[in-house]
Image (cartoon, rainbow, N blue to C red; front, side, top):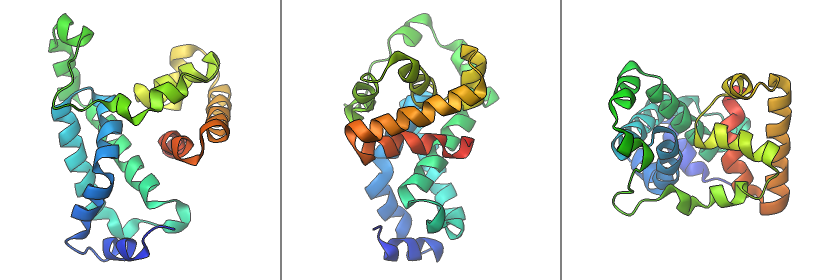
Length: 187
């Protein structure tokens, strides 16, 4: 059961609640954002934007539609994806040197693989693993996955649901929840 007091404070825009949410969820959200934007600076910007959106839209959180962490992660993922689709981001990607695209050293000891998601996903059958890789690690929408792979959209959705179910069976709710929330906004 989530901390109802924290949710109450968020809905009532208590000024200290965002700091507590950041302390509780910031590193997990940063890891997901970093996987999408591939830049520490951009991930930090997207994380800040995420918590600004959380503050502004806290009154819209509806516990009957999902857990608080799910709501936060959905905002973070969408913020990161919006950032990658911006003209500025696209221009910067074009300006990256080949060396930077091939090797991006980790900074400040942060490594998103510490979350362990990649190792867990690697245990899935290839037809599921490749789809999870595109959605989670590359930030594709289900529609983009269908276009990229040539697999019908309905099949993509079915395979992703099956993969999440398989992850839940094999590794428990926490890993499956982390990946399943990435698909909530996509239907």
